[in-house]
Length: 267
Ligand SMILES: [Cu+2]
Image 1 (tube, rainbow, N blue to C red):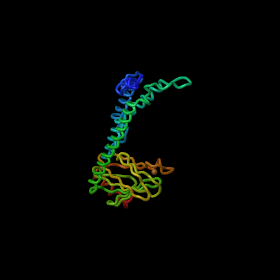
Image 2: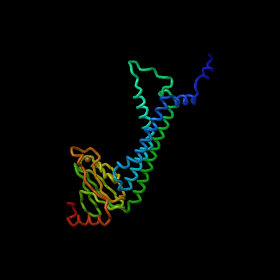
Image 3: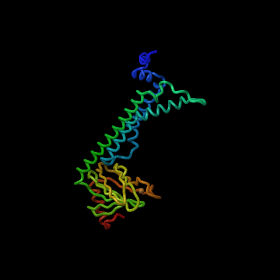
Image 4: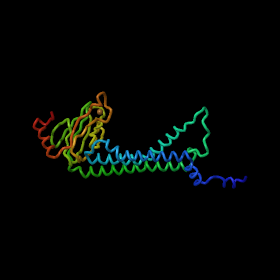
């Protein structure tokens, strides 16, 4: 047989893709993948957002939106990986010797490998682009908000948070913020590294001893805030938390005045 006729017998990439997708196990995996993808997509759109903390700021709103978008974008990848895993588990080879790889093995199927690499690569590029756009928009609004911002100096210590409001000259251990006014947090630690995490504001920033870190937010909705430490900082890390609230401007003024009346330090 001449090398020309051998060349003719080789399947074209189109034929290889067709014979690959027509295989029964590939079809079954594909259908199972679609079902799992649909499940993750519905969960991402309707269930997960309800399990996330309440949205009390612009930043938390965009954080929740990004988590939803990422969940939906990654659903097909999770769907396909789980479908292959389930299919492989249900069709485990029994016996001592592994079966020989078939000619159509996924591992050597160039079209299948290319589709997989490009689709997962596209997801990574989309994730980076969306993340950078959100980061850019948050930075721009923080710069625009800066002149109206109320400053809060946040200090982490083993194992408690404290707050100092320079303009109001009050020292507190709970964090109240007026709704609608931008906030500029200046965060530091007096001992080990902590991480300042007012959950419902969508802010999480390291608290270091040497460098003061900053974070901006714009509270939008009245309601309570849980403040936690998000970095393992020793024995009582788990209980390094305090409470706070987004309140109306008049309630905030009353709160500040009541603390000033007791010497500027919250009891
Ligand atoms: Cu901590």
